[in-house]
Image (cartoon, rainbow, N blue to C red):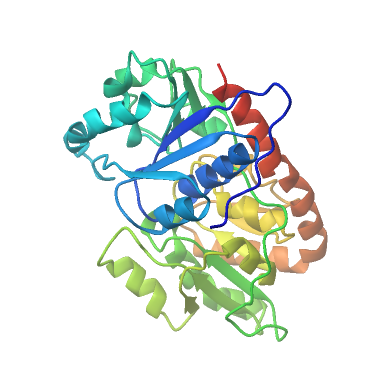
Amino acid sequence: MNVDAVRVAPGQMNQRVLAFTAVDHPGGAEIALLRLLSGLRQRAWTISLTTPGPGPIQERALQAGYDWHPVPVGGLGARRGARAIASWPRARALARQADVVYLNGGVCGRLIPALRGLPARLVLHIHDMVRRVPRFWRQADVVLADSRAVANRLTGLGAHVVYCPVDPDPPPAQAPWRTGNGPVIGFVGRLEPRKGPLDLVRAAPRIRDGAPAAHIVVVGDDPYTASSDYAREVASSDQVEHYPWSENAPGLMRHLDVLVLPSYSEPFGTVLAEAMAVGTPVVATAVDGLPEVVQDGISGRLVAPGHPDQLADAILDVLARGSDMGAAARDHARRFYVKDYVDTVEALLRP
């Protein structure tokens, strides 16, 4: 069993955190949580983690030596909150053993009515651009937000902005595509309309007009939709090379010359910070929290969403200035390093 070494500072009390997640497969929100829990574990925290059922997050939890419990919270879709009520008794029983209860996302916030009145510190972490703030969210002791754009939607909650954490030195990864014979432009993430990978597909001919040797790759799947016409259209296009999701996506991004995120809505864009941390400049859309991550013209470029021609021109501009932008990206990504993130969040978790 791979259990992180535990460092206990003199006089430090062991704290117990119970973290709830809404899905079984890790996305950006879950990756941030797992990085936080790993850091807390190294600081003598006792970790318990829940997921709706078995899956990759459960496997990571058990490998790290955490307690794991299945607790369904109703799914990601709208009007599914009633399904979480069946889990209220189990959630409350587990929370009685914790000093901190960490609700990772608004879906997990459905458990708040079941947890009020317990001595545990109740932390709600919002990772989405929410349209409505439920009144019972105000019962959380601490509210965290992935960006200032997210926090601005959480009126009256006094949300703390904690940008998502990145590993400054991810493990090496072997690129599944050919390297060394032209620049590689890539999208890494879920193949869904909100992320906009089809705009990169549509930008491909214009990119090749300016950089004939360029390879355009798309890395990812759609784990939350069993049958997605959008994902199939992206993956089957002859304009790009498609590869399945990699567990070591940050290491893989070392092999990209430009990372592209053409999203239509995005609270933070962890993949941008991960690419920047390994010295890969980025092109993204100027939506929601992404301008808080990317310095336009310095660490990458920002364009309007839904404009493949603008996307292509920005990619060609970054390719022309790749060395300088890569160095600037790596330097700017220091503000997202995981150690500082754990320092900040741990201070908010402790009473």
